[in-house]
Amino acid sequence: MAPLLLLLILSSSLLCLLLLLLLAVRSSRFAHRKVPLPPGSLGLPLLGETLQLISAYKTENPEPFIDERVTRYGAIFTTHVFGEPTVFVTDPEANRFVLQNEGKLFECSYPSSISNLLGRHSLLLMKGSLHKRMHSLTMSFVNSSIIRDHLLVDIDRLIRLNLNSWPSRVFLLDEAKKITFELTIKQLMSLDPGEWTENLRKEYLLVIDGFFGLPIPFFTTYARAIKARAKVAETLRRKVGERRREYEEEKERKKEDMLGSLLEGGGGGFSDEEIVDFLLALLVAGYETTSTIMTLAVKFLTETPAALAQIKDEHEEIRAKKRDMEALEWSDYKSMPFTQCVINETLRVANIISGVFRRATADVNIKGYTIPKGWRVFASFRAVHLDHDYYKEARTFNPWRWLNKNPSTQGNIFTPFGGGPRLCPGYEVARVEISVFLHHLITTFNWEAAEEDRLVFFPTTRTQKRCPVILSRRKSMTHSSSISSSSMEI
Image 1 (cartoon, rainbow, N blue to C red):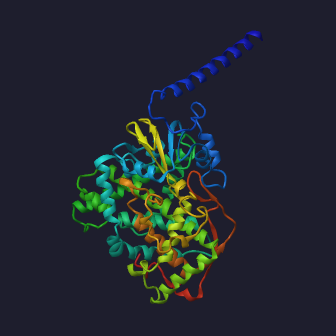
Image 2: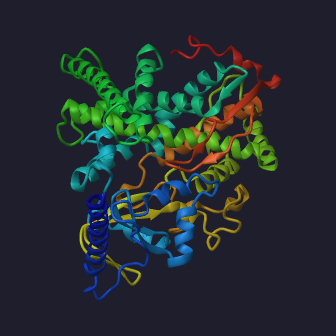
Image 3: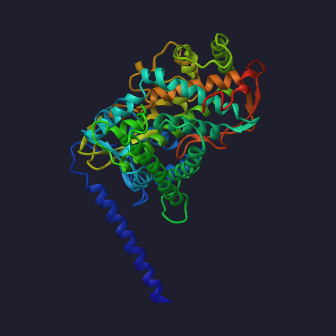
């Protein structure tokens, strides 16, 4: 018994000594620097403050981890999460500095678990001149003139088709995701909803689940997502190969969609694997964020009767000027000023993208601190959007704050779509899709919450119960029920 006790004492002593040495090394490693590290805590060895980060977001406070540390250390602080020392930035000027210096002082940095799901050729993971070229190509397909002249008609058509199929009780988040999936497939590959797209969507849902699971490769949600990703990639690869053969044999006129441009080369030839990764990444980008904003806009409006009444007036005025089943036009979209206020405020309060990770490629001096080369940086958009110094009653949904205010003039304090070279290329088409969705929902249905549902903020903002609502068709809009697949040329 005595030798065992002695062994335990020696083991405990050695462990304590090892921990002390690790802490000493981490402290002395940066002691020589003239410009100090941002204040903060690296937490426990190996674990850092990861457990505090995860547990904090189980509360109803949208930003508890950051709030506590900003109060203690200031707007730029050091922590250690997900296995790496990380500097959190919650200052709008510093965030802009990080975003604008992409490719100079910082580079995009995401965990390998994310890379495995997206594919190594995804836009999110591209760097340098290739990213610049592909980002420009993407933006060229979703700019205002393309949306007005080509995309809007299908956005309106597919949204009405989906709403027409709704029963009297739906989970709004699920239905919004189905809509955004179909819209994105249409824009990328010119494919209307059908058996092929529905089968793809079922596998795709498993891939999306993997982004929110622990990256353990066996018997987990993440493991199932990796298998589903392979199936989705193979399904897309067959479709890409089919389109490529048709073009080469001139059996089909070239379509003016993203796939068509990639097959033509987009300024340089692309393999089928590169095209599949690129399409899958764009599908991910257009699916989760837009559908969640659609859902939360409805939730916030439902909880704010005055805003709901005002947006109803706006859309009923537009609908009153149109014939039965007449599609929305660009001029109608431009006649929705309060709708844009609602979208802006939903983006600000919800913060579907709470921030972005970057990695310092050199020692970087910022606001009087040094971010060491190789350290990860998290530029927090949500912390700025919910800061009372920049927005009065910042954590209250108030769409009227945006009246007669252009978001583009808000400088660095409103960045729901990021910024710098990685500004979200689809920000305008997302706004159009949300606006058209709200128009047809408001002019077709009355609704009420089926049960109480609350927001959760980790790993992304969403509703806990998928926003169940009870619907009743508006008598003045009974013509909507006559829309069928045949009348919509599906």
